[in-house]
Length: 125
Image (cartoon, rainbow, N blue to C red):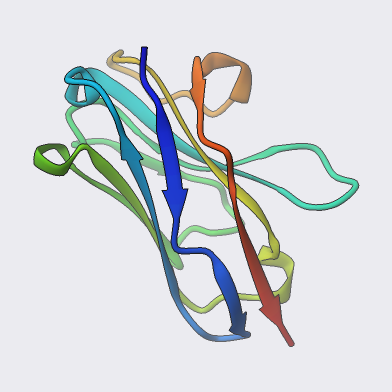
C-alpha cells in the first residue's frame, strides 16, 4: 500500500513557476513508477508526466514538454513536478499517482494503482 500527499499548488500569474511535491508513505517508493496527471473542470483527467522506478527515464505530454520536469528523491520518498512558463491552460487539479515498478512508462491513468488527493493550480492571465 502506498499513500500519496501532494502539496505546492496555488495561484500564479502566467509565465510564473510552481513546484509540486508528492510525498509517499511506505518503504517501496523506490520501486514504484510515478506519474502526474491533471484534471480541469469539465474535462477528463489527462497525462502530464511520468517516470520509471529508477528515475532514469521520463516522459511528458506534448503540451508541457520543455516547461515541466518530473524528478524524484528516493531518500525522501518524494516526487516533484517543476512547472515553468505556466499558462492559463495549465489551470487544473494536479494529481500524483504510483504503480508497481516496471521498465516502461505508463501514460494512461488506469495503469496507476495509488492516487493522491490532488492540489489546485490556477494560472491567471
